[in-house]
View 1: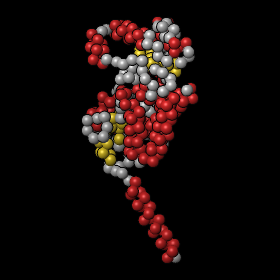
View 2 (view 1 turned 30 degrees about the vertical axis):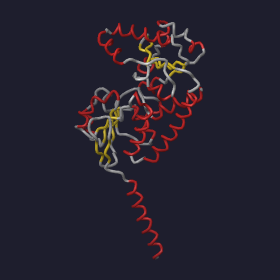
View 3 (view 1 turned 180 degrees about the vertical axis):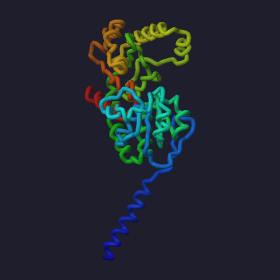
View 4 (view 1 turned 90 degrees about the vertical axis):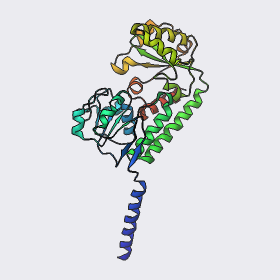
Length: 315
C-alpha cells in the first residue's frame, strides 16, 4: 500500500515539475510592430490575418478560431468555411465580429499589418510580416516563435531542422546552376524582380544569384513621376534588359492564376516574345512558382517546403 502511494506521489511530483519546466508564460514577443507584446498564457482563441502565418500554425497542429477571407491552397481549405473565414478581409478586418469573438491573440502580417494599431485595441496583436530582404531567417523566426507561443517548442524545432536541411541541400545544388531571374506577371506584362524587390526573396531561398541589382533610389524617383502605363512600359524595358544578360534559369510567378484563377502567361508571352527567345526558355530552364502559395501564402512553412522539395527533385 505504501509502495503504491509512493509511486503515485512520485508521478505527481515529477508530472508537476515536467509541466512547470516547460511552462514559458508570460512571453514577451518582439515583433515587427513598434511595441513588444506580452502573452500571459497559452492562447486559446486566435484570429489570423496572414495566410503564411496560418500555414505555419497549421504545420504545428494548432487550430485557430477565425481567419480573414481569402484564396486558400488545398491544404488550408478547411478554413475556407462560413464558421472560420469570418474575421473580415486581409485589408478590412471585421472589428464588430472580432469583439464578439474576444480573441486571446490576433496575428497580422503583410497585407493586414496596417490594421495593427486598431486591432491591438481589441486583443494582443503581433505582426509576423516576412522580410523580403532576409526571407529564410524570417521563416525560421516565425516557425520557432509560433512554437513558443503555442507551447510547441520541440515540434517547431523539428519542423525547422527538417526544412533547413532541405534548404541547405537545395542551395548546394544551386551553386552549379548559374544565375536566375524572377519574373512576375501582371496582366500581359512580365516584371523582373531582383533581390530587394517584393519577390526577390526567391534568390535568398534558393541561394541562386540574380542577373542584376536594383537601384532603389533611382527606381523610386522614376516611379513617383510615372503614370501606371509608363511604369508598365518601364518595367517591360527593364525586364528585356535583364533577359539580355542571359539568366540560366527563369522563375515565373503568375499573378492572374493566384488571384483570379486565370493565367496571364500566354498574353504576357505575346507581348514579350524575347522571353521565349531567351537561353533559359530554350533550354526549358523555367520553374513556375506555385501562384497561391507564393503570392497569397508567402513565407508559410508548407508553402516554402513544397517549393524546396520541387526544386530539389528538379535539380
